[in-house]
Length: 251
Image 1: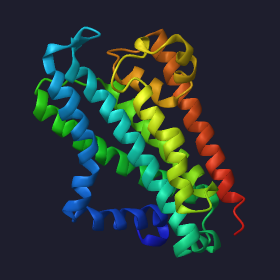
Image 2: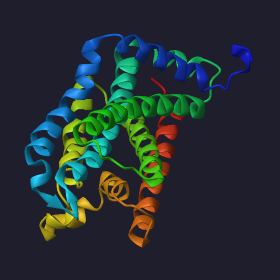
Image 3: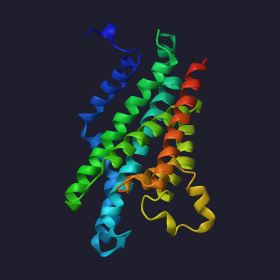
């Protein structure tokens, strides 16, 4: 198959992957991708370790799926949102994509797939460190299906942010108002049942809440089906909105 035979989204995806590969050879990137989750793992997981039990398991085993959910969210979202914002406003490379014979849908697919790869890579780092720390981790197929949907969902949200923001500072503002609260209050570090009743309704609106619920389930029960429907609905909605924003782009 020649390059001409590739799907239209592939050049967009390939460009992001080539840039990602350049970052991978720099130890600073690997360190920065791991440092925050590893600090959480060391502070909470190793600090409390097996002395605290939550939902029938030790705290370290409980914490690792939450860290994977959080890392896949932040990396899938941040990379896409930041790259799109910079490419639109500062580097002006996004305009080339729009002018090229590539459909908005293909641009969306390429950006989202690139964000998913970066989110999955960060998740793999956390899983590796978590396995070394505990040595007894076990994950179901539902865990990995949920991880893929989560990366897709937040990469799509990253496209929305990258297309809507008018400066790099705006991207940080969205991150502070939406991503950081989800990271801390969506069941990453402690069960949602321990959240005050007045906040539970808000927490259950967060898509990451349902990712955390699914990642900690051994099988798909009724509550798991509801959470799965919710994150698929969010992922579809974010993808549709992101595609529409690209199609309507006119800068």
